Image 1 (cartoon, rainbow, N blue to C red):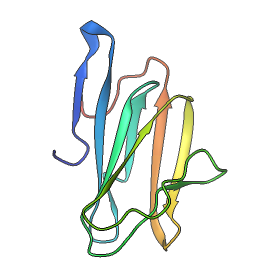
Image 2 (cartoon, helix red, strand yellow):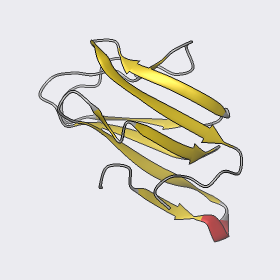
Image 3 (cartoon, rainbow, N blue to C red):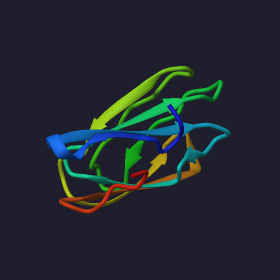
Image 4 (cartoon, helix red, strand yellow):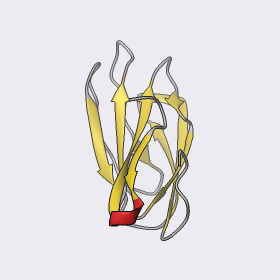
Length: 105
């Protein structure tokens, strides 16, 4: 999949799947807007582990090994800044809306 890509079936009411790459010690894309119920998959393309840890404890992937991924279903609306606890300069933001248009559509 392409970074920030999305597969959606809005006419059928199914959740979309979005992909965020961890590449070059960065989240790509750095910000992502999704709908509640959508799935976000973080894929580690770097040769070392990363985490996806929301400020305030909304979600935490624990360590994601190189070449592995982690899925999260966005069930709560809001704006969720997150970071890699192993590389604190690596930051991103997940925005979850109830009916907002998801980025990538």
